[in-house]
Image 1 (cartoon, rainbow, N blue to C red):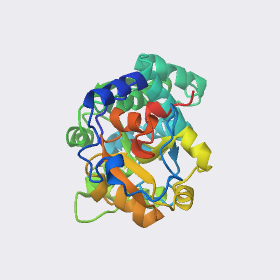
Image 2: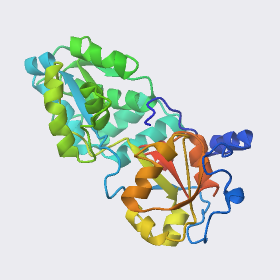
Image 3: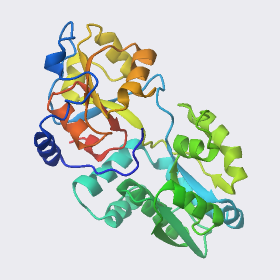
Length: 331
């Protein structure tokens, strides 16, 4: 259900888009919240607010899509400083860092190069790395977060002595083969997604919510296609579920388990893409893993401006977002 090409709109734009749609929730499986009449109480009724917060997935419903450096195996073998430098990024990069950079680029419209240069300097990534030489091409996909991460990798590699540049390659079907062939030497990847992509069997799932177990599954798969992966960062971009800060404060919840404990009256409403009611990691997973009960489901988009606006405006209590979305930036 992950969408790798997405646009993060400011709240004002999101509100306008929602208003323009008029009946954005009319095609959801639960139908209109007022029309459904299925809620048995109002303990967890939506609470409008500007600030969105993600509730911790404390039972690891979602796979671990931590940012991880992917490197051509031959390039890594010829220059150990390549992976060493990228691992230095992983040591400091957090989800909150990624949210703040995404917000600066997508919401505040600052140039990627300036945002990344500031982050590199503020975190001392322009020193303490060395040993590099020669040209290195860092690949990027065609969405802004990938551009941010690729630029971050390139800046740190430049600081280490490489002649690093960024090349936009497109989607995974294009850039992974280019990485395997050595046409690009490095790429900022997402742990669980790339593991499943390389494994390639839709009938099996080798990634999980456990970072270490997923890295262990990825390592031999990567070796088989001429790739090596560095250390995963704490930063992750994965499906997540957000509420307004006001809603979280009113109930005193920070995790999905706490939400389930607080919302036993069936009044909770969920928003997200149309496939959410049938996807194991969306509504069925919330029900089976956490025991959550929903009065209704409203269909919007996959972590996009309509879902976020619906949460902020109090149309739904909780909705599917992406964990590194710039709209989650505090203040």
